[in-house]
Image 1: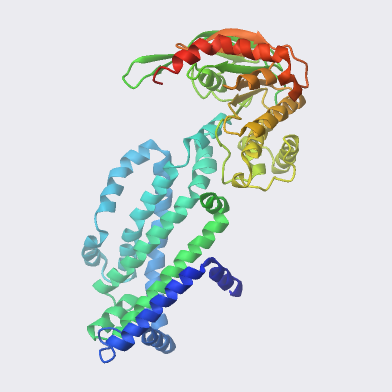
Image 2: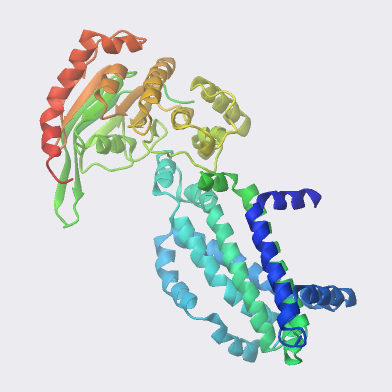
Length: 262
Length: 265
């Protein structure tokens, strides 16, 4: 953990640290100076963090977060399990591509949120329903990103494989899949981000537990401190996902990052 | 296992492509030529004369429109383990280390891991990359990458080594060095080699035979035998005989080069 922290700090250039610090100070000062008597409109950074600590100490933050993570994990896990293989298949087979492409495009350009009321009608407001909404949000960005990435795996590599007598299956396992690892990571990054948005929307539409509910209830009662505390929690979850994926990419595709940096 | 050097025969070989307007483009016309086992053949000609097409036909990556290619008495119908190709551009797999790139062909064949590994290490040593087995391609220079590329082709123990301008993207000094290295490796392995290049000095320096091709349509205009002693030393390039050979090849392809430079591709 200590090592991880040190690496994180080393990777963050001084300018970024300064810029972040200025932002937080500006937030604090704005809250203290202009919204001193009106905490229902805006709260300083310290108040948001204070509320976060308080909510954590009562256990309510953890309960809501775990609930949200539950449907997030199920929905985006299933989305990755279907979306990534589908994307690779679309990249490798003309037949799969021509069948799947119009549907993927249609779903991608349609705001998937319009379906959520229907999902609630069909599946209620339980785990399955919310996992389904996360799934819908995460699936198509994952498919399309994996697909376009696997199409970019150079045709030359496939020709090399062919010249060594690789079968279609061997071309898939030795060229397309390893060559697509960076775009699969990118697909997960994009899809999980969309999944997180879907968590919030799903919970706003109806739930009895979850971070989105915590934020919405607080907002209804003009409790801005809790709203900001909830937002900070989502921000931390997003950052955690982001850096985990970067760590996975360093392990799974060490060649890629170094190559793009060159 | 593996192939020692093999003979290559091209018999009345022709290749057409279908152009963008549906018209037929004649890439190669009626090529009949043979290479003895263990011969180093350089294929030269103006851009667009079809030398790379000829190589890809022999590799089995393209099918001829008519005619036949016979390698060691066997008709070529597709890629095969008796032939291996060294590609022009950076065709090493970036996600594999140098050693794993070399082992690729053996892996496809299902050769056991420990046998694979020792053969791969031997080959890396042969191409002068001992100790670099765990480097990724991005960590290697252009010259080193092409050494790995050569080792990858040699790993499957082909009888016929096909090289498509492997040194085209290297700087001039590295290129000189790689020519000498290739000649050394070739002498050590004695593979029949077909080496496509537009660099005439390189062609004469390396080869036993230069196949000179003409353009529009691509055809073989002469097979020139190069009688120079081996091992070939760099000083050879300054000898009068060497220069005469290079000048002769240049005169044979010059009309095509001049005409080609005034035409759209």
